[in-house]
Length: 143
Image 1 (cartoon, rainbow, N blue to C red):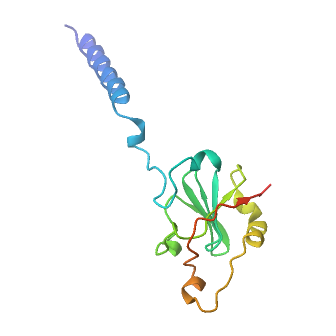
Image 2 (spheres, rainbow, N blue to C red):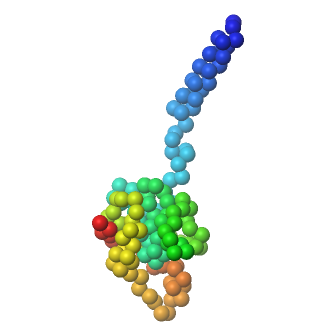
Image 3 (spheres, helix red, strand yellow):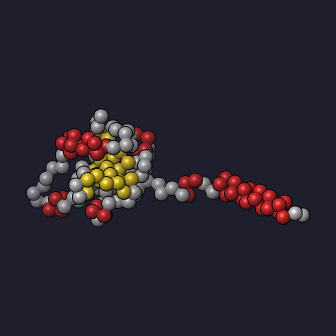
């Protein structure tokens, strides 16, 4: 057997192993899935962005990232932004936006006005951004 034949057989074997690996291992093994606060049934089919009025933050379901205002500019993060880490987003008000573009923050003034956070004078935790209990399934229109 020549050296070239051995190299060809090794390359073929390597290609077959990669193909078998791709067919055997399910693709969802590598995906993170929805965040723990996201409801499970049909949520992705109905909307693309979730607006959290208490935090003035968005979650892009399609891209799996958070869009939030930080130090005078909009930032994007695949993890919950550090300024919101201690907050239970599952108990925060969540608004399903009727907006399918990439930049819901372009309509932030409209969203802040329409879904204005009600201040509770007796609830100091709320003023720190802990939010309201509930699901908040309103339809936002950020045309």
